[in-house]
Length: 472
Image 1 (tube, one colour):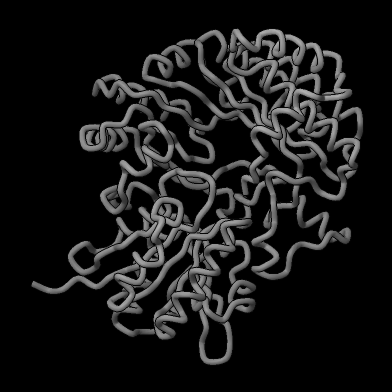
Image 2: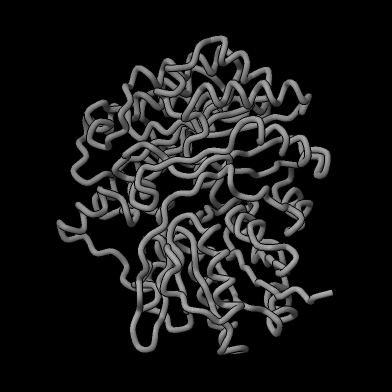
């Protein structure tokens, strides 16, 4: 029997515990008879270095998935450490950051040999075969690599039909460890790649060119029936950019769930215009099939600002979606963004008003508010950079880039303090009802209704007990 060659893959340490779907997709699409895929997750394995060291001797390559921001710090340190142990081992970075900065990543860090751009399954197949057989990388689409003293960027790769890819082999990870970290038996799955839409704050149009591919509902039904029997989960967390792109597909998926008696809850992303295209019968069907919660990005309460962001939705659709989700007892997360360059007080006031109105509709609604930070690859970022804003220019600087928790230079201290108080009292006032804290919750609602946040002693006490955590 032939000895399988090892492929080492690493997921950097972050504060989120979703399953490493990108690495699972890579590993699942390699020849199982030829390669032994080892996935080490810095979030799960307290002895990640030892786990890597145990396999590094026989590995063909060391691959890392990298998201722009704080995960870069661990990815960089681990890659440098791997190279210190085995300087000849090929190191590969993929993910969002290398899709946005393919050549810059190699220019900045000599311990990284290859970067992958965009959808990686087919690219990684070809890359592993070339490394294994010691053949040229010149014709592999979707990579940048070192060649002698130069860096070569090959042409990009078109998005591949997801139905032609292998089923994800979750046995490559310890599924139970993720359930434990999450505190619930929630199963992560991605049923589509890419997005047709053109939001100017998002990097997806840059990475996937507004292309989209999705797994057929019949295949999803078969896969979930298999996964449910094997892993006994209670809930599915869809990681799609836009799960509800085609209502017909979602109807078929819901019927698959019902016909197979899966009896699971599920959550995913939805646009307000997609909700607008759904009927009450559609909502009743998805609710019956287990729909628990959707995420509907609103971004702004101002139609003018929405149009500038190229959301391509009407504000009235947001309220229509909210009312129908409330009618069918579906929870919703409505994210908002404030602090865009040159955003007017009128726009901010509109957002504040819409946030209040949505929270009043259902106790199952949440309205997290984020500050705009220029995420690389987006149209707005290109505009602010052209106007003088300086993005980080090294991996070390990107590792310190907090694109979720902090505000950009366009946000004054006064605005920042207002929204930090607004968010806090909104969460207290409209969060889970707790009888002992009912007076505090009612007073918090009064604060929110009147934008009255003077002497926020409740917030100070809370922060002493539970310090805020950076998320990115």
